[in-house]
Length: 226
Image (tube, rainbow, N blue to C red; front, side, top):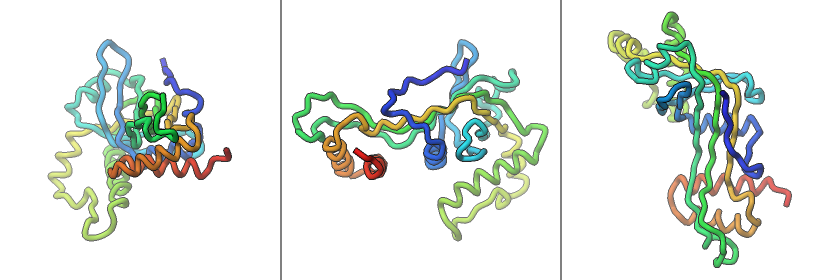
């Protein structure tokens, strides 16, 4: 069973490039395995591959400790139904931020998320080149976000014996996509005045996550036609 996520129409995101951007910006996902009475889950950084505008061709890959129960479950089965849950910034909203300041609305929560459903399997165990390429891609992707020297790093910077021991202790995994569901709850169901009040309120909180969420709302507001 693939399953589905309840998403009110106002909050549904179907633009694949926007979904790809969220996954790239917030690559740490919760991997949840299905298929039996025990629910197994783990948080892992994932890389996405495939044409940005063709999500039906996407695949996701990561690695985890060989001793992890998730790896043990996947060793028993060729593949398992699974869901990856990527989340962006989120924040509590007080109704006091709305235009009248005396709103009868209840508090709520704004957030971003992408649910990727498919089947996950172990990979690369008979192909050392797969794991070498995966580690190179994962490290290079995120080192690029840090910057150049003196913070440059590659896996080959480690002593060969240490690197070999680390590689022996992990296994690669890959998820082929069956369905992708995007959620952006950014006060789209509120008036423009209320949305602007929320943006101001979030910026006033003074923390990075609230500011990131406020900036997302402001970008969405700039593209609105109402």
